[in-house]
Image (cartoon, rainbow, N blue to C red; front, side):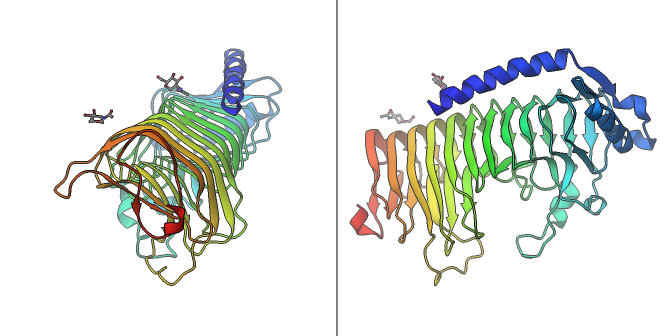
Length: 400
Ligand SMILES: *[C@@H]1O[C@H](CO)[C@@H](O)[C@H](O)[C@H]1NC(C)=O
Ligand SMILES: *[C@@H]1O[C@H](CO)[C@@H](O)[C@H](O)[C@H]1NC(C)=O
């Protein structure tokens, strides 16, 4: 019901967006003065400012070509619907110290934004990945995200490519009704923290028909993610599709209403994952449905991990208090690169509730034998064929 409604809303939005773009006045950045080396930061800001005060729909155009672009914030509110059409390749400075903010291109406080075109946002991250010491240094600097969408209502992001970001590629924060259609995100599998799309504190976000190949999560959904729909997305390499991590901070908002449908994951470290920190404050994640997913050589294809503790010193800490409920994993098939193909490691203090699992066929080839599963502090409701069978006993026997 919810999904159907939101698909209707999305189609209506396409129609509106199409009309908007067709009738828009064009503001071509190259008419605003290109600096040495194809530098367009000032030109883009000037074009945006003029377009933003236009009382009829407008489009800022970055035509085909290669340009260098410093950090820019494109801010609303604007007077009418606004488009940004990128046909060229935008290159960020490769030296991370030349971007002082946490975003390279930031869209903020805009209603009815359409970002589209066949162009590329190239974060030129190779140098930043080499200098990234976050694995060892907890106070490491947050490196800039390629594209940040902050506090937008009714945005459409179509066809663009984000490449080699210094850290996260795209973040969505504090937004309502944002639809990604056919975007491409690429970075090498060994690039550090180059998550594809991260969504936090936003309602009504859809990602459809995307190709996301990175060194970290393909799509991650943080606290306050509500009505998030991921469909026909191809991921890998990277770390898979993740809800969380949740429960690191106080006052996190609930995660509600996630669907991941018709996706393919290849050679990712994890498949579909819900992860919460050990020793977390109270929180919740519910109504999360994973359906029709193909796994090709994926580690931990199905995993709920409430013992998440990347710092590795959580042994004496209390269990997570993030309550996970109404979750389903349906029609998930393919090959696992780890013997443990299905792992539900739920919290001892707030066991998972209403976890449904069915029509699973995950095979593993290795010297230890066939694929296995494990359930702690959860009693899954099963249906259809299950390979591996659920579950081997571990902890929380009262829930088995
Ligand atoms: C998923 O795939 C099935 C089977 O091909 C199709 O019937 C369904 O409409 C698809 N749903 C989405 C959201 O893509
Ligand atoms: C599970 O997948 C394997 C490998 O693709 C296949 O041989 C087997 O028939 C499948 N089992 C079911 C029950 O579909």
